[in-house]
Length: 489
Image (cartoon, rainbow, N blue to C red; front, side):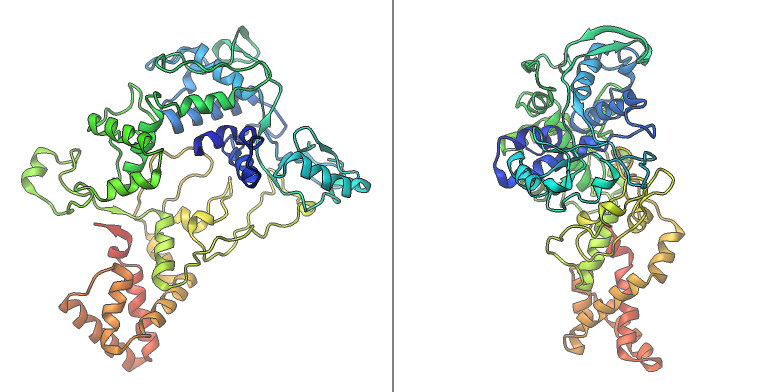
């Protein structure tokens, strides 16, 4: 369902239920965020569609398709015809355009949004604002773009909207010789790659883009790649490396699976369990392989030094989001509720351009999954700890150790506040239980006798020169930013 909504949520939304209309439409932001390569609408649009096709291919099928724009794929069985069959599907889709440098006389940007209300509810609100001359296309509930400046100010806030896609003018694409849209070749019917002959090729009606049919084809029980790609990504999340170590490239130029039978079995199990990601997490985390120690074994290391066959658990650092969430959890400051909308400025005040970009970041104690993510500028904390490039597909995170990370942890006001909150949690219990409480919160284990003795001596000496709270703050800070708090052993 998740895959289908990312590709065709706006189409599925019309089927109901009403309660899921907004989320299904918003899910197509996955496509809407395809890269733009010019400051005007639809300039170099073939490159935007190339990014869409390449991202869909890597994300769901583990296949790179970009080179098939100019010629048949040199290594994988993807032809130019296959590429332009997919190209036609996305060329038949209406993408949003944010406006960039395009301004009206009153410095109000042209915008294209899709309303997050069904057309009947949008009609009711439109009637209420008829005097404001709001221009709304009632056939698909889209707010007409590219708006007059004097009318944009009266855009009713009651109509929520999203940067999403909708159905466009259905048409098949022509092959572009050498990838040049100015050199058209034969027209190719909208469709899917022919190499997956074990799946019935979807029939795309003349009046539809084909995104719905593509989504259903990708999630067909006989599709050989979608489920394998997903379970491989889940496996990589837990082990640091996938069964296929090139998670976005299952082609001939990608790595061969280290355990092909296991990958097949996991994929089939995934589909049999209704594509439940939670069930797959539970299956992996309760396995003997996951529970292996990370201790070194000279004999095994001599045979398999890279641990390709998983004779031990590879030590790995938490990703940026998990580090942030862990620090908030340890300090007791994590807000587990679901947050409301970000406090964006009103649309009528927007004057952003390619050269004057939106740069705000909003403080939050919620889980990192709820943080605002800007397209052109990475979140300062997540970027520092190797968060992904938000402007491109990231198949595997890097994990660096650089001085700027240590400097941040030692000098950041946010970390100081978290250390204070952590210390106050520890001091809620009796003095004799505080070290054990600190270790339980930070590392989910009991301290060793030596660790307890060292901690008590540190607190005593520090408190002699300051006060007890300051001593515990210093000690808790050292636990909060320690190796054990950041790494899975």
